[in-house]
Image (cartoon, rainbow, N blue to C red):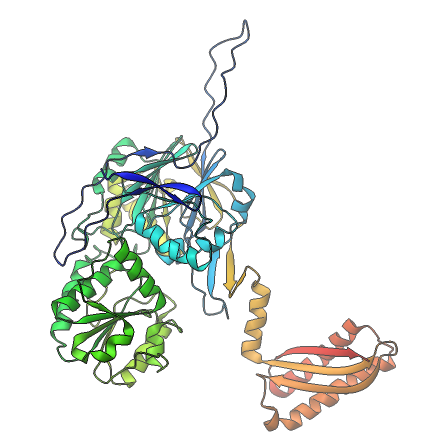
Length: 619
């Protein structure tokens, strides 16, 4: 078992392993011995009572045991959607939170940067929260933490790489010293109130992923996190199927399992197959520069790119802030092995010939401000596309990002690059289990109740059908909605109510200050434009002093629609004169009359409905 030492971080003591992982060599590494499971109380449980009350004289010493309370399971994110994963387990006066992720905005969320879960239920029960436990370091599982921890400053538990990636975010938000972080290793158990959380090693598209076995007074709950079964992982550490089987024999009350690939038949291919494709592409591209875009968190994919570059004598340059941070963190923690004199600064690429270079970049999803998008649009300072550059997009498009990816691919092709993307080559494998792996998880854990998680409704319902095909009773399977409260005990499971939930939108520095009304106005402005009407009036008499002037933005080009704008001005002027005749002096009433009158005229003439904003100045 790895020796441990006390490390003080942000005012809290943390147990960190002093040993580091073995560097990833090109060949399959021998699987590291798993640490013996150890129980450690990282947060204080409720204080014990000072003494036991003695029974009164003559009273019975035997009494019936109180029935155990039910365990409440509440999803605040990750159901009927992709991303924003967050699940709450509540027993008595104890709450633990599993993951705290973000989602990217949909097309109609104009100007929104990120979407995070609504934590109003947790804010009301903050005294019950014993900690946040993390399954892995992807954005959809840790991305909301910097925002949530500002309201819920509770301990956070995760593996070494997961917390390393989180620390980058906390540093940006200037919260690193304020957040209590506790490093765990697979096999370790952490007591949080009346619940014990056990961390189980799994495989995913990011290193150091874990599943959770939550030991509660009513039974064991298994949460798989995002997982796949990879028998030849890059780091040599196979998912701990033995532990899942042991839990199944002991009895699993509830299984919550990843549903992202529940519609796909068969098994997910091993990450190692991508490395062989990279090697072939590098071999077939001896004279051209190679660029590879992938997820910055996919350390195993980055490792294989570096391995192929080293094999063919190429230097590697990293661009994109998140990619630079991820490579730096993974290298420092020994999750990424970079051969000596292989990595160079992006400013040094001018010193090497094209056949000596590999550039690893962000932008596999076509994000507007990513490095690859800026390269495609000739806006990157250090890198520009050359004819015959080999550009590999080693990722599948997240639903909703397809247009952005195709836009970038088209720009690169127009500049003469040879772009490898999609199904052209096997340059990407999923990090999520397919049907046969999901069946295996169900077979090993044999849960009494089952709750599919992580996916849209079609994924959840397909996962439900898989469980039914394996003999589970439909009434024991719960396809939940966000905010539903599932109460579970040894006898039954049922939905007993709901809690407030929804989407909190992040726009710049604003968190939650943009809602549906603001989005509706933005949509209105984007589709129909804006007309501003400015008039000067005497408040006491309602007399028009000057104007009205009409300003158009995004509606019509004024110089080409002078007649329309002049007529609109006369229509507003006539409306104001009628207000004066009728002795209408309320500013709100006058503004309403202006809007209604001008709206009807504009619709009659153009069949458009621009936003109309009257401004009345008191003279």
